[in-house]
Length: 374
Image (cartoon, rainbow, N blue to C red; front, side, top):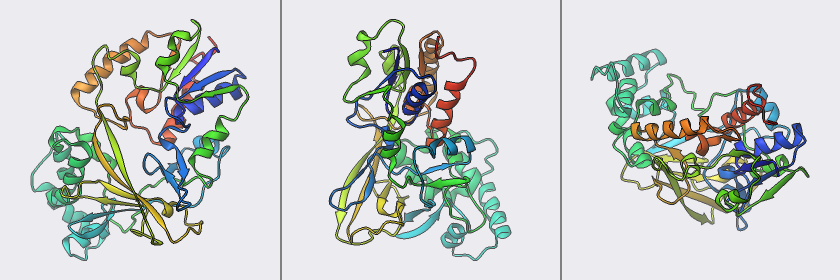
């Protein structure tokens, strides 16, 4: 087999699909897990009949027309739009921070213009003109009160680090709005696959030229590969090089699964818990992703806990100066490779939304400077 893809997640599956359907070449795709789909894997809970996202909620959203056209070859989407709420000191607020959040928290009735001016004054109180870390960046955007309510405790739980130790650019993922729009994403297209995420990967890899091997790690087969094999590697880049320069740090998540004999547990798909006194970061209730389906009067929830991974599944790269330094050393080794492409969240040590992973895989495949037939 000339083409080997390591990992059946988004990046790896797109690559395997392109190799088989565009190049008309045989490709072996492997995964150490017992299922395809990577962290997007979903399954039907037998007791409730609800489609669950085993590794946490995944909402597809994009404004990239090419990505939207590509993914729609393998699925249709419902019209779900994501709205997130957060609980702080027993009261529920909407996220991202918006006019409703501001007025509710400060017990005010501000107009958009008044709210913007109010938050500017809050943010300017500490005169942080050149924020050096996440805490300073957040305070410079929304002021200390909103930071301590909605950012500080959640961040400490999510990263198990003092926000002063984290990069300022992390907080740019949570914008502030001065209207009542509480739609979490603002992309042109959004929804949940009507048949579930796993069906996408099944259809994507449904080609006689594609051989799938599960419960198979790269270490199990690497010594059996032909010398001219071309590898698409979506596993951890430091693991590929046997941790020559040290291990990259990751965050992982654990879930506690609970079922209830009620039609609705929390009234929304995702409820965050901002305070550090609550041990979990959020609760997922998956039935809300499919409002078009009439489920039983039962529900299933996932309580999500975040911690630094040791031997667990890596989820989120921890972008500290030390990790970036280690990563750059691995990147230098990767540049010298002639028969391997590193991709995806683990291979690039980079957080990807689903559409970004699809777009990156397609672009790498189609890049005229990258001759996959070579």
